[in-house]
Amino acid sequence: MLSDLDPRGYCVLIASSEAHPLVKTGGLGDVAASLPMALRQLGHDARLILPAYPNAKKQVRELKPLMELRMSGVVGSVQLYGGLLPDRDLPVYLVDAPAYFCREGNPYTDVSGRDWGDNPERFLLFSRVVAHVAMGLPPLNWRPNILHSNDWQTGLAAALLREHDERPATVFTIHNLAYQGLFDRATFDRLRLPASLWSLSGLEFHQRMSFIKGGIVFSDRVNTVSPQYADAVRTQRFGCGLDGRLRPLGGRCRGTLHRTTHPRGQHPHDPPPTPRPAGERVHLKAENKLELQRLFGLPRDEHAFVVGHVGRLVEQKGVDLIIDILPRLVTAGRVQLVMQGAGDRALEQALQEAAAAHPERVSVHVGYDEARAHLIEAGSDAFLMPSRFEPCGLNQMYSLRYGTVPIVHNTGGLADTVVDASDAALAAGTANGFLFDDPNADGLWYALEKALRMQREQPQQWRALMLAGMRKDLSWQASARRYVDFYAEAIASRAPLHEAAMA
Ligand code: ADP
Ligand code: GLC
Image (cartoon, rainbow, N blue to C red):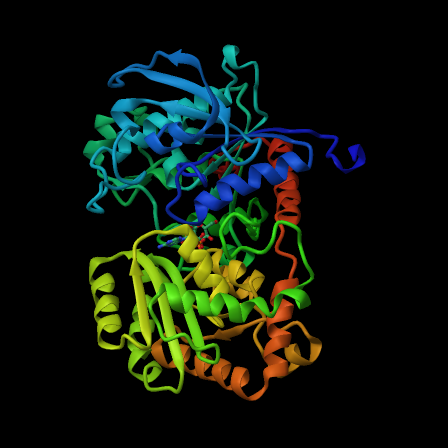
């Protein structure tokens, strides 16, 4: 057992604005809980820090107040709490600043979906506390040698630590470069950040302040969440204006494929707590499909070809392409579509109208519901992800585990995890899904038709795709090991990227 542990034994503080099951709006929440657990299994002392949203505070086990932080310019009190995640032995620090984090809604928006107007203050405060904890606060009796921040909400932590000689090495993960935390100059002044940070080698980005740029330029190492997306962010098309910053970084900016921790036995349709070989699980598809049709009010038909989708309803995810293929989908024989998502009001409405117009074929649940999401992944024959870009994507991986064949756009993490059913891949037994190159309705429809034909006309091939997906190694261990190597590099050459770029 001991020989499996990494002798370097790092102390890693992982800062995130969400973590499952405390609070989650997307894949960041899954990753923020899975990665530290995988690191702990390798023998590292990884701990999580996030804001004390009401739902987080309610769920943390063995919650204890650790200390009060005295901070200038902050409204009300700031307390640091410690405890464990409810479903695993993962230490978590919660930053309790009720004036900033104790409110209804999600971490970023109010109940009507509007960004909180004080998001810059909220995530500056969070980053300030993260920076304090990263420096090792005496009452905690713990001092990390790595601070690992994630996305724009934690981007300022590395910027605030930049001048501390004793600071830990810093790693910053870009989960999605399209969300940058951009605010105007007046906000920068209001936040009273050091004036020196307003520069092109600092936070300034086209006359605005960019939180994510803080994470990129002031960290020792940067990564994105799949190798293909690491290439994509260096291009003008997907670089969101930061490609010029990322290109010169070479190996200091990498892609590390994220994985899934598959829930076992938590939801009614999860695989059983004790793993069983893929071959013994294929027959569960029929049962799950009938249950899915029942729950979503579709005709119960074991032989229908059911396609599913779960996700945030935003332009990135290409849900409009699914809407565009509906006229073809509802006239194809025995095809049903089950969708769940929330976000853009116009997309929500268009989907609800489609379901009302074709109640035998289309069923839509607008909202967020974990158990239903798992049932869609488990009970569908195929899972659609026509994302215009996808940094990593977790739903195609969940689908693979359930023997649900993903049909995805050939981009980012989708391209890194789905192997297209080409003749060569079928012959090699590696094919597990369908990729399409053109992110438009015809591209999606062509791939869907190909899948439908195979499922109907070549059931053995289809079964081979399901089995290849179920057997694919998607565990976190390999990714966690890559992170450990990345941490080692960051420690060995503790030089923020803005300095390295100038050297
Ligand atoms: P992103 O982080 O861009 O939203 P990912 O594919 O990485 O995309 O992760 C999305 C995560 O959020 C998955 O775990 C997915 O199941 C979950 N999710 C998204 N929308 C919903 C929803 N409406 N109901 C339940 N789970 C959802
Ligand atoms: C982001 C990306 C998604 C990725 C997730 C976890 O939300 O949009 O593709 O899977 O982060 O890294």
